[in-house]
Amino acid sequence: MRRRLLLFLVTIDFVLVCAFAYCWGGGLVQFLGQNLSLKFYNGVLNLYVPGLLGAQEEGIPNIYRDVTASMYPAIAQNEQQLWYESQEENLAYYENQAAEENEQAKQIIAENEKAVTEQPVQQESQNVDETPTQKESKKPEKKTETSGKKVSVNRKKLQDFDYLRQTFYQVDNTTTIGKNQLDVDKLMKPDLKIDQSVDGPQILIYHTHSQERYADSKDEKTGVVGVGDYLTELLEEEGFQVMHHKGEYDVGDRDHAYSKAAPSIQKIINDHPSIQVVIDLHRDGVGENTRLVTTQNGKKMAKIMFFNGLSRTTASGDIPYLKNPYISDNLAFSFQMQLAAAEYYPDFTRRIYLKGYRFNMHFCPKSMLVEVGAQTNTFEEAKNAMEPLADLFAKVLK
Image (cartoon, rainbow, N blue to C red):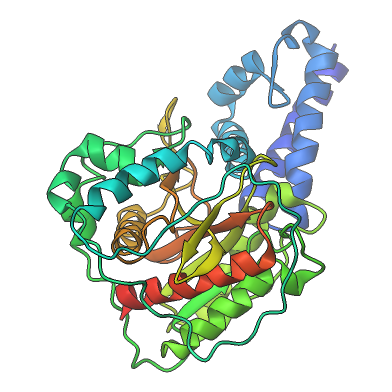
């Protein structure tokens, strides 16, 4: 009996070491701590208290989670953080809601059209059966031209929380948001113009999921990284100094891309204090019959979507392990971009997507995650979308 008790105590001490190594270590230690701790938990239980191995949740028995929380708070805190990080990576399940957004977008356009004349024709094709063909793209002289006349958006109606939420936002069921955060006056208050006099990169573009491709992509240059190259070129034409980071964080293990990217992005920002804007450029995933296409300035292009993480879940409230001191700034940035898009490029953007986790938007007040089209778009369509997007950045940041 004494030997079994001694073995139990030694095993618990080892688990504690793994937990602290995970909290204060990184890289390989983090990976080993995460996987070995789960195996030790279940092994110890199976040996000493097999009756507790009932319902399983995320690899740890519910009842043992409670026992651990009371006896060893550090381990419980670590496991909860691992659970949140794994959830943060799961972007897939919201994707099939893209099709229903078209009706919301059309509602905004219909209201705005009353205020303008000679409005450019906007089209969106859904469920179009096309064979993707990549055209040879000609390098433009200057592509960031405003589309037609400015549309007058009824800002008084935006004061209504329900109207604002329904027309500008799509809120994932993992999170909640209230009037205090979606207040137009608060969202418009920050002056987002950057200091262009500073020497060094002012805008950082990177890709958490650098391997994302389009319907006709052949390599990295014709995937989301190639789209980032073109956005970099256009923003530099606008007078910004831009750094395009092409680090790969989703090769072999997409599930932990955000965790893998975070140290590198933090280091880049630390090494280049001139950076004032951080853009994580993605490509969305939708049903195979969904086509996120619009026409702007006579060009067919992919629709884009701004994305915000709120570090808050519907079930548990604020997530203590995914703190983001810049949530209000992030929301103001995406809203002002969305408003500018509604005014100058109606039907170009999908609704802003709000989700419960953080998505590495805590490094900079002006952080933005942008979804450029989806896997059903062509590379040319995604690339063309960078022209109005660069113009919108210029309108908001200059």
